[in-house]
Length: 211
Image (cartoon, rainbow, N blue to C red; front, top):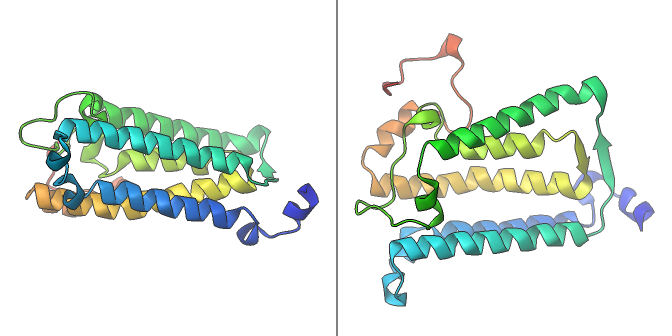
């Protein structure tokens, strides 16, 4: 079995199609359920905005667990494993990713985000403080660094990391469309603040966002 797996190049690896297909289904369901079109049906089902967010979070957790389980049961093979000084830059990138994720959670009320606390009367909050002054999607950036910069990857784990990263990029477009509909000021914020990578100070222009 291992010999059969290693006989295939990375992009034609036998498990790749299943990983990417599962990622597509996850991305579609996750993004569509977050749209206003689906959210408007929540009251008809007896769900408040808060309970809808809670069930949305639970469903995302369940689908993620099923996706990970599937990846770990598919035929796999080691791809690379860096050690010693060669792994240090990757560990550093992962540490930066973890730091960005933690700063992301500090910038907003995680209980509201997960549906464990009542949604404000004004609706979904528009967060632009903390690290969100420098990145529109810092949490996505942090997780992509954490996943892609791993010094150890198998065929399946790298395909999974790439699929998740692609979802983050595409899903962010759906998220931004929703925020533009909900918050008129989001267009200016989007114009001034980069999505995933901060402005390089040497070339940074005046963003107009107050620090």
